[in-house]
Image 1 (spheres, rainbow, N blue to C red):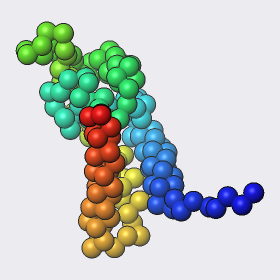
Image 2 (cartoon, rainbow, N blue to C red):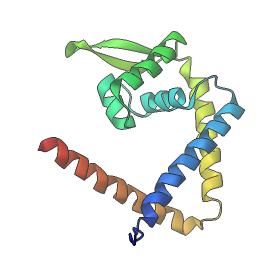
Image 3 (cartoon, rainbow, N blue to C red):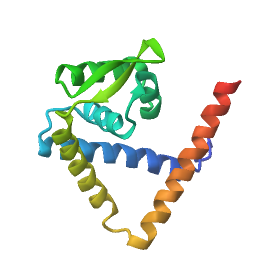
Length: 153
């Protein structure tokens, strides 16, 4: 059969790159000894980046299912790195907050992320790094617009 090869170069390149970045992040995370899985570290990082948010907002921002996030939050709460507080606007909802115990781990997570970033960008000239980031953000925004259109239907 003569099925033409699809032209998906950038798609597979980005998918492969995401997997490599995750693998490198997991390796760096093990070096800084946080005791957290990559998912837990990522969750802690998002709680820091998006303070005072509900669990549903965090799940959306992380592109994970709410039940997946609940597992990560349970572990982080048991380790006393986060706390779930009642949302003053909706008693059924919980707001996620960091505890002071999270600070040293966030520093280690930041170190791991910076190491991966440095290695990934080491052969890209400094003047092209901003262009790369801008192009990747544009791709992300385009895909998010499609998702948003799908939810409106």
